Every structure is written in structure tokens, then in C-alpha cells.
Image (cartoon, rainbow, N blue to C red):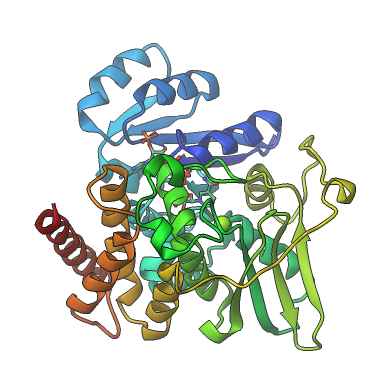
Length: 387
Ligand code: NDP
Ligand code: MG
């Protein structure tokens, strides 16, 4: 009875599959209304057969016939292409949309979901990085709640429970430091994608794993936090915490600091976002202090990992600057994963793109679309010149 009906955009990814594990463990609480994938038709079909959503979307249009024929004996509507994503989220039978797709592609479906009055469980941080002001304004206008899935933001959100009257003095986002923590620039020049893809604590999609290695992920999270919690850049600190046990902290005006802790497992923040404000009983492994006699903290190295400094700069600049760095970063990470550029060139490419693209102080949606296109085109051309 009264199950919460969830649409998962990006159900075949790291967050999407873990969300389905949470839903499978709580069948009386959640039901699946919509599943979507870009290319992984085989997994989408398997998920649809198991969870029986009303609708599925395959982004890659060439796979539409394959998905349709595999599901033809089930009462499941199959759609294709990016445009289908923006209509499926509007369905009356959805209570909440989990945005678990990667990159800029999350922006438009999220806008449509908010306009249709759907609460959002937000994993796709790029949406807030690109257009945080627009998204938070729309959420307010349509009285939609945005529940963070990102573990750091979930930690802060959990620490803020019961503190509605108490202003935040600052927040402290923790960062694992990624696989290259402690290395200098000279040794980073030759690191390979295989090394960069080996995250010490979290198993995630390729793009966010590279972002974690460059510290761009933390930069994107600083911007995400600004919009989610209404903060200035000087109220957002980053501290490296290699064990990933303290997921982030909030400092209040009396100096008291609250932290949220636990083993690194995305199912917890996913579940918290899907079922807020109640906590669901879980069988996830429990953290034990005795297994972690030393939790350590260190300053991030902004000179080696320039992307974090670039993100702070974009945040302070405002306007379309964060949209530019997001676009350039997506292009750069893709090129790094295809062995077209080296690890250190990722930051070079983002800085070059930021200096080239026209600044827009108060961007509209179409300004963001144009900025994203121009920044991608410019960054892609730079890569071709270098190749
Ligand atoms: P994955 O790469 O594992 O999964 C991405 C999902 O999005 C897949 O379902 C993929 O489909 C789909 N997808 C890819 N490209 C597009 C597109 N152009 N349009 C629509 N859908 C697309 O990513 P993650 O699950 O790791 O990350 C998803 C989001 O969550 C990111 O924004 C990330 O920053 C954020 N996040 C992830 C965390 C994690 O632990 N993984 C932690 C915190 C935040 P297909 O499989 O068919 O390619
Ligand atoms: Mg995170």
C-alpha cells in the first residue's frame, strides 16, 4: 500500500544499480515506475524484467528495436532518445525522480521533473554545478524538495536535521584525496587512466572516478553545496580524509561541529534521500572504531590538484563560469579516458576554455545551453590541435 513510486534516470550505472538494491530490499516501501539507460540495453532489459516499471527509456536510439522486442510480452512502454527522458519524468504516477545519470545530460530532465512537481533525489551533481541558481529557483517556485544523494551533501543534510533555526557558520566537505594523494605534479604527468580509475574507497562510474583523482569531484561538490545549502564560497572548506569514514561536517555559530559517519557505502545516502525523513532499518555492514584506530585529516594540495582551485574560482566568479568548467571538464575527462590527453592537461584544458568563453552574469536556460555547446566545441578543438 502507498508505495513511493520512483523513476530512476540512469538505472544501469553505479548509483542506479545501488538504488535498485535498496528498492529490492524494501519492496513494501518503494516501487519502480521508470528505468532509463544510455547504451547498456542488456542490463536495462534485465532490470525491467525484474522490477516491472511502467516505462523504460533507452537513450541510444539504435538499440530501441532490441529493447522493444525483448520486453514485448510485458506491459512496459519503451521509448528512445534524450527527448523521451524529459517526458517520462512528468508522468502522474511518479512520486520521486532519482537523477542518477552522468553529466550535463541531467539538466533538462531535472528541470522537467521539477516543473511537474516531482521531488528530486539528486545524484547528478552536474545539474547544480551548471545551473544551480535556476534549479533552486524552480524548486522553490514549484515547491519541490531536492534531497542530496552525494555522500558529503547527504552527511550535511543529516547533520542539519533539527537545526532549522540555527544558521550554518561553515561546512567542511571531506575528500578521500583519490588514488594520487601525496603525489607531486612531476609524477602525475605520466599517470595512466588505469591508475586513475583505481579509487581507494569507492566504486563509481568512470567519469566521477577520474574527477575524484583530479579533485574536480570535490570542486563540483563545493559548487553543489553552495546551491543546496545557500552558502558563500568562504563558508565551504575542504579537508582530505583518506579513510572516508567522516562523510562531512557542519559547524554552527556557537562553534559546535556535527559530523555524519559510517563506512563508505552509497546505499545509505541513496536510501536516506529516497525515504527522508525516516531512516530505514538496513543490513549494511556497521562501522567499528576499533577497526579504524586512526582517522586522519590533511590540507588539500591545491597546487598539484588545480581543479579544486579552479572550481572555487568559478564559484566566486558566478554567472556561467561553473557551466564552462563543467563542460570543459566533461570533454577533458572523456579525452583522458581515450588516451588523447595526459592527466595534467585536464586542468590546462579547463583553464584555457574558461578564459575563452564569453562571461554571462545572469544566465537564462538558453545561455546555459549555448555556454555548454561553445565550451565543449572549444575544448574539443583544443584537443584536436594537441593531438
Ligand atoms: P555511471 O557512469 O556508473 O552511470 C551513469 C548512468 O547514466 C548509466 O545508467 C548510463 O547509462 C547513463 N547515461 C550515460 N550517459 C547518459 C546520457 N547522455 N543521457 C542519459 N543517461 C546517460 O555513473 P555513476 O552512477 O557513478 O554517477 C551518476 C551520477 O551520480 C553522476 O553525476 C555522479 O557525479 C553522481 N554521483 C555518483 C556517485 C557514485 O558513487 N557513483 C557518488 C556521488 C555522486 P549506460 O549504463 O547505458 O551507459
Ligand atoms: Mg561525493
